[in-house]
Length: 93
Length: 490
Image (cartoon, rainbow over all chains, first blue to last red; front, top):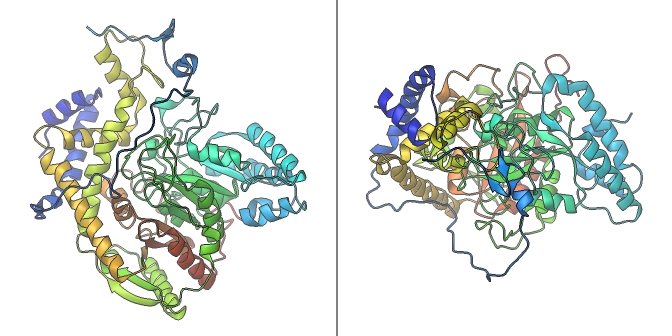
């Protein structure tokens, strides 16, 4: 079953900082939900195709024409930090 | 003042069009009611009375010229998961507390074209994850029938607003029951349309293969009317179906003689309260008396639906919610030295416990080594459930069940027991997995609390579902209103 170290690894993948208390609680709670989910493993699905959408999707094509979109100002209007028309972020490397 | 706040949209539209009532008077009635009950119910995250006032005045001018829209003058609550240009859209989350969209969701834009009077953005479980509206970062909504109970969720604010007279009708969204279960808990009609019938453009995504927008109303006629304004192809949503939209108001009328009604035995098993069981059995008798053929049906793999859903929905959510990274919109925690730290701290501060749990669960189910066992297997189980419904609809025109196994539960009662919370959606979740339409209509009371009957139909079978719902609504003649002792009163 899921262990504390798994929870810490998944939190890293999900870019979520967890407190000690959260890591503890999530280990217990995720274990509980996964235990319930284990039931699906008992079904024989060897000849069953997976379904990603219940109503089959098809590719949607359209002509590649220039149309109005968001202005730069609008696109940046929700950004926590922008400058000179750019999104500003902390250093990456 | 007249109690316009307690009327149906179709009644008010007639009065406004006939010049007997002004949209401004209807709005006054609803805003006055909000002033009296909102403090106790907390249906809204962001009330928008000024915007509503301008829209009602515009509706009156249009009505005077004979050109009012099909929603003109009807005060509406819009779930705060739908983007509204210039009005903040929080999704019930600290992450989006200050987010003001620069565009309208397609459904909102369509309704604006029909004279929308939006009175507020309705409260909800954070990012639509929950069944009680207790997961909102802005505090819970209370059930207008009993203020110590939950209104259901995740569209609990939308349902509570309509039930309390703080809106005439509302928009909700439904990923696993989030329209139907609160409609059931609040004595209302709620419909999840066929996947793809209603545009998802501007609906903040939770689980993209399951999410649908739909109406929460006071009767089936209002539901048909509102659905007809929402449905239809949208080039901005690649999953939007390019299918003709029937006239739901016309299709809703007529008898249901000879209609084949299936009752999936898997949805009538353990876990139902006596009141729910009796109310649904009463509906089956009524269906038979109306000339329908009622028989037991079976959906053999249904016992696995909840488990499959709690892999698929969190998996899609973990991917969708990756966009909340503190860069383009929403919260950013200051003081981080680098990008990774900024992401981790922003998401830790912005998301509440249930959203974190589901992101973690979904990330785990999609991670290397577990993908096949969990996500891959859940998608195959989904195929089996889709097939079960297809087989059942070979024999039946509609399937019926309770909407939820119990009436509204108490505030705080299930917050510590995740599985108990998740089980309140056990009857509604399979419908989202199969992509089919379903409606909940009020079908009785237990201990003074409303109960819901769920009617499910074939893909794009909304017309049949609405006709059956309309016939049952007439036969049941459910007239109960929230009491003044435990609830807000009528």
